[in-house]
Image 1 (cartoon, one colour):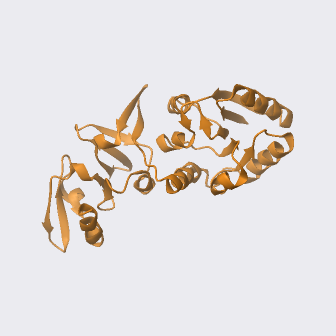
Image 2: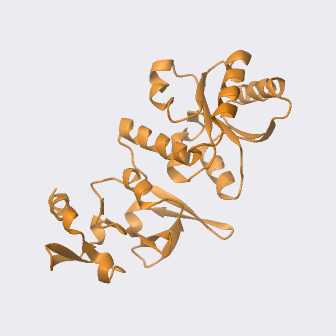
Image 3: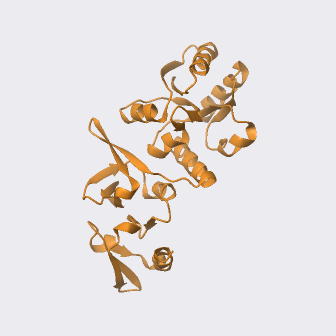
Amino acid sequence: MNVVIIEDELLSAEHLCNLLKKTDPAIQVLGIFDSVKQSVHAFMTGLKADLLFVDIHLADGLSFEIFNQISIDAPIIFTTAYDEYAIRAFKFNSVDYLLKPVGMEELGQAIGKFKKYGRKDISLIAENIVNAWQTMNKQYKSRFMIRIGESIVSVKTDEIGHFIFEDGIVLLSTVTNHLYPVDFTLDQLEPMLDPAGFFRINRKVIININAIRKTGTYFNSRLKITAPNLQDDNSIVSRERVNDFKEWLGR
């Protein structure tokens, strides 16, 4: 089993490594990262793991920002100095959490839980963590980190014109006419984006309010939006969303 440790306290990371070796000699620690930036870069450049051990406070911020920026298909065990009440909201979104200092018995129990849990619905874990964290703190994505070949492009949310689902993938369209694929569905993106600035006008498009040039009536009680790089049926506000859209525009 390959694991990754995301922890900014070196002694805590070394302590966890030692406990993991004693708990299961077959466990391999692929890497230790002490910041959001390091972690995002590692996973964006191809790092894969069976299980993550993640501290909440890192050198450059909160670890939840990692899952806010990228999609990681791996289960998570939090290691934290927070007490049980502060972290309870995340218990159902991760495999488990361990209070520092981590002990052998609880680590063994967490590993056992992971093995029992398997990879069922793992793809939803990071999404649920992001949603729970944003609900508690009313924080939304400020940028998207997008891998293009061997490069990573950073796009701020205020540079986004819209997101669109086309040919089986979701594309981010910038105000400067660049298109980038993103590793999220539109359903996953909606809670990540500030609802004051973004609205899903139909099943294929989420638009930035600043990209809208004008709106007009359209047949069958719908509305048509004029916005850069948004054409034809993609620019139509579906009938069931029209009232909410009008209210959103008027806030």
